[in-house]
Image (cartoon, rainbow, N blue to C red; front, side, top):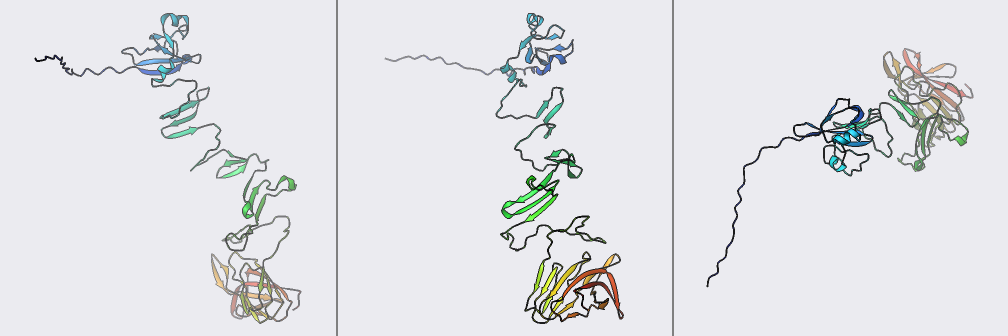
Length: 378
């Protein structure tokens, strides 16, 4: 026999799209209650109203529940407010869900904003992050890294930024700058006093190079390099008082096998121990070498002294010629001749004087090496 089964089938038909709803009220505030004048119209955000007002009163936030006009007696929590249901203590969850977060303290793990303002008690903006720029007028920052900074004013430790430089302020402290590399025995410092207090002394500059490892492979240590050039007169170091203590000349040894040797401007004390005849050429002098001194001592064979080309002023230009040697009792050797010394144990000192000129025969020589003998024995 057959079996009959019954089922209900339902059909749903999509209706037409409804009209777009009206835009809701915009949160206004929070405003301090004291900042709103009597007569200010507070809005509850009802239909047709553009705003929903929030005020701060006694460090609490209140939401307008009934639109009304401010009077002197309808402040939040007043009997008037309570009886007319004008204000409601802000529900933090409700406020967070709106366009404004109101809190005495907030701990936010990730925050994305377009503008941040921080104000003092008088409403002055102390910190602002807006339109890609950050302005901070006060604060203490620890452990920060600053890149591409243009610092125009302020203090750095004991130094004040002033114009294009740094100066100590006030002028009664011993501000200093020290650069040191203890592993290389290097120390450079300038300031009011760069000596330790235990020394009981004062020094305004200290430069040391005690590198024992010949780091650059030069086997020469330089503590300070100074230079003065391109002036009518050049003074690399000027002493207006005091004494040189511990000064030493760099020694240059002309060896036993030498028959010819060209000095440089860095050879200050020359000792000749040559066994054969040797010709020594005085160094080429530049425009900035006026007063250059060379001390020489002969301990071996015969020595001849000859000059090299030197630079002397020529108006606004210069000339490069061989100078002369002025020796003994104002005698002159021209640039092509040589001074011959056959006596051992003779000591001579040469000083370069570019301001002198001498005429020998028909030739004029610009610049002269003045020779001093020690002892004087013509």
